[in-house]
Every structure is written in C-alpha cells, then in structure tokens.
Length: 374
Image (cartoon, rainbow, N blue to C red; front, side, top):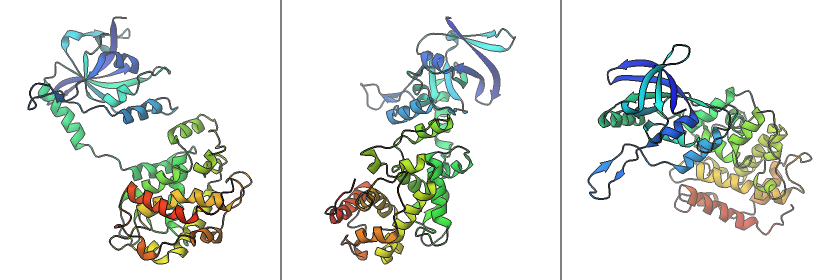
C-alpha cells in the first residue's frame, strides 16, 4: 500500500520519453501538487512556479460534475515526477507499470490542476483518470509544455456547446433551451426570427444580435438554478424537484419543463416577444450603433421582466392548470412602460450587467403599481 501501481505505455517524442497511464482519482489527489507562479517575496523581478492560481469557481463546478452519472474526463492530466519517487515494475498480468511512492506532493501538475482539485471530498465509486507522466523533466520543458497547451488550444464556444445538446437523447434544461432557441430563430412569424447567432457566429443576417448561448443561458435562469444537477437527475430516471411558493415566480418555467411542456414555454415566449415587437416596433428592429432593445442588453432585461408581468396577469403560477398568456395580455402591461423607441440607447443603458439592470429597473417601476396576484 506504500506504492501506487500505474500501468503505462511508453511514448517517444522530440521532447523526450514519457508515459501514459491510468490512476484512481483519489490516489492522484494524494500525491499531486500545483506549483503556482508567484513572487518569492524578496525580489519582485524573480518568479517561481508555472501554474496559474486555482479558480475556486471552476473547482466548485467540477466537484458537482464528477458526481454526474455521465461524468467524463477523456483528456490526460500531465504530471512531472522525480525518478527518486518511481520505479519500473510489472502488473500481475505482465504489463509494464510504474510503482509510484504514495507520498504527498511528489507529482507536480503541469496541466489539470482544476480537474484534480475537483475530486477533493469525492466519495463515489472509483474514478480512473488517464495521466501523462514525465520523469525528471527539467523546469524549462515543464513551462513550455504548459504554455503550449494553454496558448495553442482553441476553446469551444458556449453557443457551440449549446447546439450540441441537440444530440442528447435525455431531456435537460440545456436541450430545451437549445430547441427553443432554434425554433424561435427559424420559425416563420417568430418575433425573434433571424435574431439569434446559432453557434455564436454571424451569418450576415441583418437582425442577428443575440448569441445562442446568451439565449439559452438567460432562458435557463427561468427553469433551473442547477442545470447540470437537473440533467443528471433526469438521466438517472429521477424527477427534479418542482418549484413551490416563491420559487414559482423566480423559476417561472420550471414546472412546465418538469412536466415536459416545452411547447407551452415556447408559446409564452412567442406571445411575449410579439407584444414587445408591437409595443416598440422601431427599437426592436433597430441595429444602428447604440441601439440596445433588440440586442443582448434589451433581451436580457426583458427576460428578467417576464416573471413580473406573468405574476400580474395570471391567477396562478405557470403549472399544470395554467393557460397560455396571449400577446394582448402582455401588451396591456407593456403599454404602461413610458419609454419611447428612441430612448433605448447605450448612452442611457450601458452594455453589460449595469445597463441590463437599469433597463429592468426602469421598466419595472412603471408596472409596480399593478397588483401581484400570486
């Protein structure tokens, strides 16, 4: 038990020989460490380490992800280990292996520190990870491998990730968001027709102004607080918890989603944005410099406003006995908002969360006198 046996394959490349193996996550956590780049405290011009600071937010996401029924880390974690801590051996079936000392901080992480940290406190079934192990790798080569990995790789856009949910067989908030985004973008008569940049890239359409990921992310805020957890529960054959009491207002579409009524979610959005288009026909289609209503700032503020309108229109939450709210019901409240088409400009509503928040607050002020019904 003082050794961790890792079956390996030898790889020869210009940088030198290294080994690809498989190790249980908790064993890896026990022996690895991150060499974070930082000042040594004496000379601000001298630095040590090669790694970036650990992102606690990213680690928190991974800790949740590793518990999912379909959790997967197919790419290798890269380690550098001194030869004093390893020796070559064989597995019982004769495969070449490394016997690694079960000691703390003997395997320096070159790439993969967040994945490893995500297993802290993990108590599930054994989770095996593929690793690339360099023995006696000099610091210069460690730094160059780290830099090459993190500078050369191309990140997948969030819009592409949203679009790939089309291939998922199980329901999930992400797949629902993706399907609704595509329908609203392509369906004839949609108030959002040709508004959405599918895959996050413009195709040259005049009205394209909202990325697919923005649409999906904002819609999911009305469905779930933990989209990956809901996806995992559904895939395990379980039903996520329904929204009750105050949550029914914040998570406006949650119970419709849980009941599989995505068409009704779509119809509410269709009627709502049709009312927006009728209330502000010029601003909704304006794509001139500084116009914001039909762009991310306006779209995000309008989705935040939607629950406030619904709670003033219907006698009960959008649930089993609810009916679709039509355009005229939304329009009756939107007409109370005394903001003119030419006032939806970026000089008043700055790009980003501050402008979105101000627009939402300004709109809400005009309708707050209307009685909340539930």
